[in-house]
Amino acid sequence: MHDQREAQATLYDVAILGSGIAGSMLGAILARNGAKVLLVDAGAHPKFAIGESTIPYTLVALRTIAERYDVPEIKTLATFTNSTKVLGPKFGVKKHFGFLLHHEGRPQDPREVNQFDTPGLLHEASHLYRQDTDAYMFHAAVRYGCTPRQNFRVSDIEFDGSGVTLGSASGEEYRARYVVDAGGYRSPLAEKFGLREDPCRFKHHSRSIWNHMVGVPPTDDLFDHSPENTPPVPWYEGTVHHMFQRGWFWVIGFDNHPASRNPLCSVGLTLDPRRYPKAADMSPEEEFHHHARRFPDVARQYEGARPMREWVSTDRLQYSSRQCAGDRWFLLSHAAGFIDPLFSRGLSNTAEALNTLSWRLLRAIKDDDFSRERFDYVDRLQQGLFDYNDSLVNSAFISWDDYDLWTAVFRIWAWGANAGTFHLQSALTRFMKDGRDEHFVRAEDVPYPGLYWPDHEGYKTLYDEMVEQCEAYEAGKVTAREAADGLYDHMARASYVPKHFGFAERSQRFLHPTPKVLSRTIRWARKEGDPAVRRLMFSTGREALKAKAKGRRIF
Image (cartoon, rainbow, N blue to C red; front, side, top):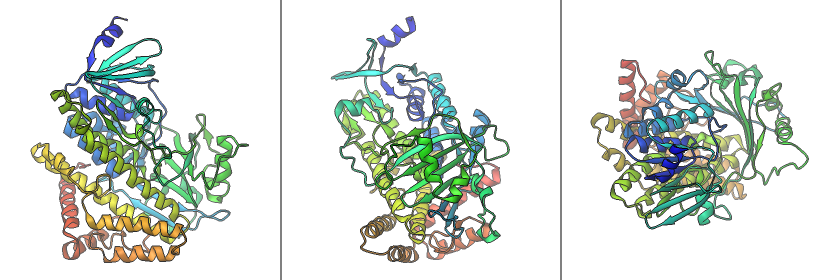
């Protein structure tokens, strides 16, 4: 009781609402760098959470904030090896993004698949078991000095000229100079200030049903295909996406390697509610299997599997906020908006926002100036991350009508994600050489915050054309073939889209970086590639070779 009274009497520099992975990482960063932090949550750890799939972009973003703010616990989550070593063998490997297009009532056509591999030397991605990673980061934040207050539901937030007062229904009060809401959809700040846009501004529409299951068959066991129709990396060793018109199922295994001691697999269904409204006469579990049975091989993917929790079923997932920053407050990540789990952007977007928010907050604490203007860039960045992800996912959902059009969207996404990862890594590489924070500050000076490759006009033009062609197809102005032809023509001409790797090659289903493929792509880059591509590829390649020589990974 004494400690609680003392905590209520303390003036905190920052109060963070929500102790999930976003709030706990921010708390650890701030406390590690000397701030007094209150970490509040309406629940308690361990917590069930989805958003388990990492991507190369996520790994570099996590490594960046770990190195920049000296929080090694965050770096633990940036590789499968470290996550497993520190937290235990509960994580799945992620060696690729796997996509299989399905048509109702028909077996899956092995010619309508794609795989984008993430080689372990550069990007040792994983499937995070979130109840463990989130609790790990929460405990790290407390060790660095955050004051935890779990099972505390904020019922009142009052602002005045000198700070913020947080109150509960039972009369408890805490005082802080600034508040960050990292609590997700049910954001107290969004409710207080009426920040939600109604209607939501995002074009994309989806709802979702999900669970953790045991006994999910490995995806590879569903098929008996010839070698040319078998991917270079087993399907189940990555994140599996079973797509169909206006929807997709996910398969994220935690049990997909021999060392795993976690029998669970994350499963889910995301679909457009305008095409597939909720079935009033079905439970979430019944509806999930109803849609799975529409596609013979999807049905077999979940055959015999058993749920381990209550099923979660949502209404429309998308929500948006008209602003993320105000005087003495900020909406972080999912407190501000959400799109769709497709392309696994949630954790990377969170880490990118944390990187730009944290140094501004530390300076604001030092200067005692928490005005909105100091956080305008972070607001623009988050809104850009939401808007570009919205147009990307919306284009993908449209493209699933036609495999050829989807492959064009797939390649534009894949190369943009790669280039963006290289861009992010370049600032980290310079920082690791001399420790100068200005490399990260300069990296914020880009024309298109939130776009994967935020400082390249050519890629921005290609991305915009992708969105325009998909929307033109949706509106009936062009055929799917015409839209795909236009995008492939653009990629063939573009010196900023690598050749030979598969980013521009229409018939290449599997983007798999063998030594021969890499050699041909490097020769192309030297002779014909855009200077920006050469810089990104060769600087990253040199770091990879150095890492290989030292027997370590750089990301």
